Image (cartoon, rainbow over all chains, first blue to last red; front, side, top):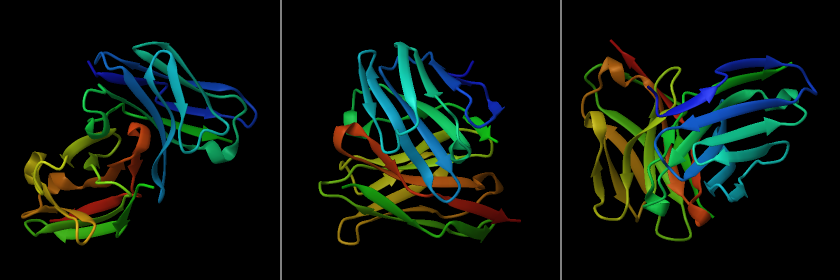
Length: 115
Length: 112
């Protein structure tokens, strides 16, 4: 079984709809991250969490919110989706032991299309 | 501020030829640098990372990268390309608060 899973894997929604992307991990890691990937822009950090009570904004948090329900679960919400939020979304985890040199472990991604 | 620049969004090499993917960094402090690979329809996985222990870093699948402070570079190389190396490659740097900043990616095509 995969260590980092994301649901759904694909989602098509309409402008203005609320949508939640979910991430679960079995690696026992404290740190979790949400990124979006756009062609030509690479990966950009949306939010990150170093433990259940520690949530931080990343580079592009506007229009997004997150919830860390447990060590193993980190959800990303789009309160009112807009077309420019169409992207590939990745969840990642790290153990935090090495800090700045942590290896990140990525989920398979969620492809979101906002019409 | 930390950032990385990947020169060349697309690189094509013949099977058996040298692979060279370029990454230059900008950092206000000694950087920690990473190369990740993304195979089609998959998430990213770590190829190698520079943690200041050694300037030449060896990774998985025969890849290696050399940290050159004077050139602010961390280029990824492999002596002989294999068809299975076709993927997208991302350079990344860690920054304040243990955030990670990724480059825009280089798509590698291997021609048989």
